[in-house]
Length: 540
Image (tube, rainbow, N blue to C red):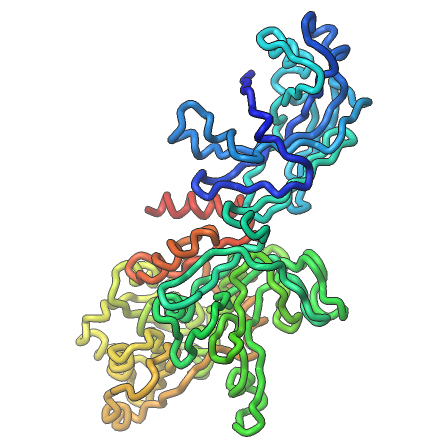
């Protein structure tokens, strides 16, 4: 048995949002039985302990156990402001011997236990404490957690029931209490000015659902807005929430009855196709509509706000339900995988063909996965850095150093996917293509003129094909990911809490050390996040 004396200044009422520290590791909630003392405890023994008790309540003993490594006194882990939420009333009829304790996080059951699973009985606990410290009316003894602990994330809601008492504790990050906004978002304010900050809760239109975001993948365009204040011709002119690679869970269905219901896990198709009334485009290729909007894009003013937030309102037409058993983490890869799927598809049937991928960044690696899924006989991937080449090999491709121009020129690939978006990459794509081959331009080149060995392209009769975003392939991609026939999981190299967005962006900007970097928002599973961190540490 262990015992601590906690300050009453850590106590807050049921329903009070508790501010979790950003610098103390993963918070843990412990559902405990709170024993309220009725009178002075002189003379209290194991046998008569019930005579000194007014009743029982629920208490949440929040802690930051990661701090123990830096705090051998184990004081800091238990001493956060508001880290002892206490039940709103006292159940005077509850039994000390077999009172039931239930605990839920965001409506998910994490514990259903009782007092008889404590290491010692409540009566023994009271007798021990009373033998060392005189208690009086209104004092509260917390009896410990009978297998009722759970890691929690800011934004999650903790419910603890003890007997007839129900304690509710919403949580948030430090910094959000200043404006009482518990909806954390990643916002680009200007070049070099990226902030994780609280925003207002979303207000939904009749055809929009509220989605609690689980994971968001950092895309190259997100990096451009952060570093340069622009992505191509889209210039940042006002603060903008970033993010368009998203998965999450519907927490409020659309008022008009459209789309998925509450509790449905979804991936997000971020395009809203729209014509301008003048420019012609194929009706069956909505990705080419000239006035379209895309989540997290500064193409138009006002900007199209993105989805890097704990909760967002999204049109139900954007929401694609995930099949049973498919993780939200994998769901966040549906959008970039669809970009790769569309790009490979622009080359036609690749079955039995030799496919080269120029640039083994996240999209290039996903193109490797798609080419293999589609039946390519050989897949070769090039990159400047060792790590992406190793990943390409793990995903079934032959890896070639992008500096090995002689080897690249000898590839004679039937199909070349140019995913680097650079002039050297474009030159390498032409060099790698067999006579009569096809080059698909997936990587977005800089605006303006771009040099390329066009004479070689002409004399080899190469087909140069553009590829922009994706069209109606989204559901096919989700199905392939869910079935496991499209192996995209290895593309994820890092996962960060959304509050650590700046550190995540810095890692994502270094292709020598990272691939796809995910941000975990309120809807992410704490268990999944912990396993991911363990996997990364083991890999390191």
